[in-house]
Structures are given as C-alpha cells and as structure tokens.
Image 1 (spheres, rainbow, N blue to C red):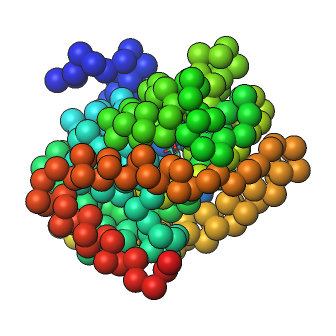
Image 2: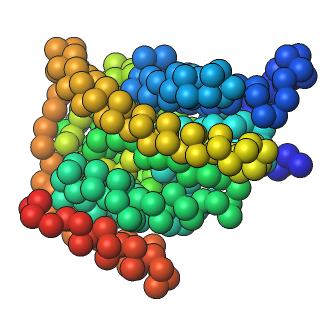
Length: 334
Ligand code: GTR
C-alpha cells in the first residue's frame, strides 16, 4: 500500500523498480538488490556500495549482486526510504536525517556538537551505540547494515560569512526533513526551511533559501558553492550516512545470504573511509581554488543555544542512556 504522502516521482520510481522485476522475470532471491542513492556516480557512498556489490558477487558466485541507482534517480531520500520500508527498493544509502522520524534512536547521532572529534564519531559508529541504533530500525521495516562517514557539516550561504547566530538571523536556511534539524537551525539563529536535496540548487538561485549546511564533498558535488560562496566552518553535526535494507526483501533471503550481506556491508566501511578521507581533502582543495570564502565560526556562540536541544530530543530513558554511552566514548579527544 503506497502512502498518500509519497510524491509522484517516488511513486513512479517504485513502479519502475517493480516493472524491472516483471521484465527480467527474476525471482526475489536471485535478482539484483536495487539500491537508491542521492549522490552522483563517483561519490564515496556510491563507490562503497558498488564495492559491496562486487564482494557479494564473489562470495555467492553471482547469486547476490547490487545495482546502484545514483544521482537521486529513484527520488528524494524521504520518498525512497518510505518505498524501502514496504519493499519497493531493496537497499538505500541515506543520511541520518530522513531516518530521524522513522527510527528515533538515529537522532542521537544528529545531536549538535555531540562529537569531540572524527575519531570519537568513528568509535561510536563502529561500537555498541552504532550497533544498537542500526538494530533499532528492524521493527520499522528496515535492516540497518552499516554506517559510512560523512565528516562534519558546516553552514554556507549567499550573503556573507557567519561567525555568530546574529549572522544567521533573517536568513532562510535549507534543512533536511527532520524536526531535530529544524530546531537546530532555529536555535542557531536562522529560519529553517526543509527541502529535498535535489531542489536546493534551484532554491538558492531563486532566493527561496539563502543558504544550507553540509560537508565539503556534498557542498561541492551539489554545486551549491557556485551560488552560495560563503562557507563557515561550524562543524555542528558529525552524523554518519546509513546503509539500510528493506526487511521485506531481507526476509525472503536464506540466512546464509543474510550473513553474507551483513559481512559485505561491514567490509565496505573501511573501503568507504579511505575514499571519504581522500574526497574530503580533494573537495576542500578544489573549492578553495574555486574562490569560495571560508571562515571559522565562534563555536561557543552556537553550542550555548543549541545544547538545550539534547534534553529536548533525548526524551526517553533509552535515548538518554544511548547519548551517555556516546559521550563516554569521547575519551581523551578533547
Ligand atoms: C549529505 C548526505 C546526503 C543527503 C544530504 C542532505 O551529506 O550525504 O545523503 O542527505 O547531506 O543534506 O540532504
């Protein structure tokens, strides 16, 4: 049953996936796993899922494989996630924001200024909190397979450098569809405007929004830097990307295939990490050469208004405990 909230594009995508099935006549065990992806070919997440696909083919003598639909071909992350939960798409690589309303435990990793460093974030994704959060998706129709790196998100806009919340006042800032992001940008001084990623470039050109926030590679791959030339290093979020699978397709596979998929997803994490580190560096170099204006924000001016969101969103003992576990992994990384 397709939800009425699904956009026409998402609906067509689901139809297309189903159509492919009919055309190929493949069954639910052996046809390729269709994987949705918002980023273009060559982006580290795309290449990591393809690497996972090659591992699956090798390890199952071709019984399992992956076909990645990159560049948002199947629709926005919100739409494709919904389709994934009812089985119309098998795999989906998304950021955590669209998972926030589906699996509330994912919100922990999206909390502003939660991580002290990238090693702290990586210990969390690879450790017990990461596992608990991935497992929490099961009763929402999704099998959480692994987390991929996504660096740190920074503000960018068309108007000028941002140092303190006063500089964001009056600016319309695009956010992913998540209540936590909306609250975060409001607390940081801006006017949050939820828009799917694929529509943001046009919104920036037309002045529908004045800015957005994202990591270096996304700021580059979306070409938002062509319009929004001021990149202000806030590092307010260090949440990962997630690779999830439709539970409906999962349950049609034998246990041995399920185990192979879990292992291949895990094995694709270091592949992605190496690609990510390289891409982050290259994106920064290219963007600086392209003449964007970069500045450091006054971080304490943002942590103070944003930190009350921790208590507001960690509103159950389970979430509070999870948050405490993540903080405990901060260790020596000051
Ligand atoms: C990127 C992420 C995408 C997408 C995007 C966004 O960092 O890789 O999956 O979620 O952010 O802001 O919509």
